[in-house]
Length: 573
Image (cartoon, rainbow, N blue to C red):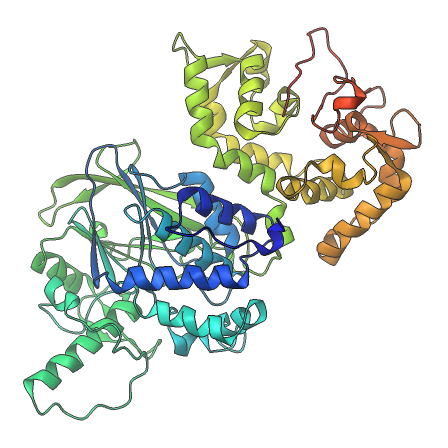
């Protein structure tokens, strides 16, 4: 199967397994085949037609967490980071994506393919709100700096006009509001031009009768016409409004649509509908999160998930609601100022700008892999920690890392780079909760060390590991267990065609010379992977330890560094 053009999708409902495969395809720079993408759109369209404007998100037990994600704007790295960090959806791990999936960034097609896949595969655990950019008029605008759109152009370059038309038709059926546990209102833009707006009013909106820039409407001549104009304005306000710190409500001149609404307007809406809090997105925030009303911060929060948005230095963030205080959490308050029994935390991060290539996304693949397996790692560590000490031995830790990640390297050699302090290594044990909590910082340090060409080579090869029988076989064209000079140069040429100019492997002959540790004019599998874990120029005494007979090297990744007194751990893929 050519994963650069993934398809066809299996018949019947889309499964969690297929959704995971689709996410993995996009991680590696592939895409859905044309027919598969259209099938995905048709299936989402059929589902959304049966969904109302207002969707309830229940929290059936204290174990349930609900993540609220703000604007993504075509920034694939941010979405992948969130899924890595929060985990995949399940009955205790719910997601509300609060609109503005597309435009501005380069990977809007990938974003909606992943979100629609998750929506179909986890229909009770994944929810999608409409943003102001989920609209034909906005999507047809040029990308920055000449406009605020770009999705039409991207969609046509990756598929065609028909696919773009299908996508924007799907957008018309996206819901407007989600209510978490009947208490938290999640809406993309904000609140409304008049008082007394009820959830029933919002349910009555004809969301297909929406135009972001309406012409001048004639004064209504009947109650029905007046009601229609009112509902259309409510929908525009829902998608376009912004909060302001002072009381009152006024037209949003900066956007030429929606309202600017103060804390009194927010309080009135919450009181009218027996709600506790509004969560909205729509505005870039320096830390990805903000509370608009200094004197009443509990009324409203803004969440924005596209980090480095438009070349700015903002962080991205997402919120997580729960009924159990996870510690250092915000309390959701009632309008009377009493704790409601709900809490939320904010996860801030910086991933990167939307303008990067898929290859730039792949440069974080190793870090993303481990973060993606975070929950499985914790479960394995706890299972190994029979005495409940909060620690595992270094050997146990290394074996679990191999088992869970599927990457067969000598993980203990990476401990200093993963944020584990020297005294913990000296004791022979690792506090696994501390390791998990510092995982991101550790991998940031890992990405900053080593030779630039080797790092580029490693990331490029690792990004393709799941599309090949194994990375070694990618270079070893004749399958004899040794990479010749010609095979190595050919492999680098293939990789360079897929890399951006700044990331290309500039000195393949020098890399080959340094990786050929035994001077045999060829690289066997042990030399190959030893060089990637510890480059030869960092330790001239490092020697590969041949863990497996040559006949088996096509099936095993055997990574080691200089042997120590302790027996070398041998892991099988």
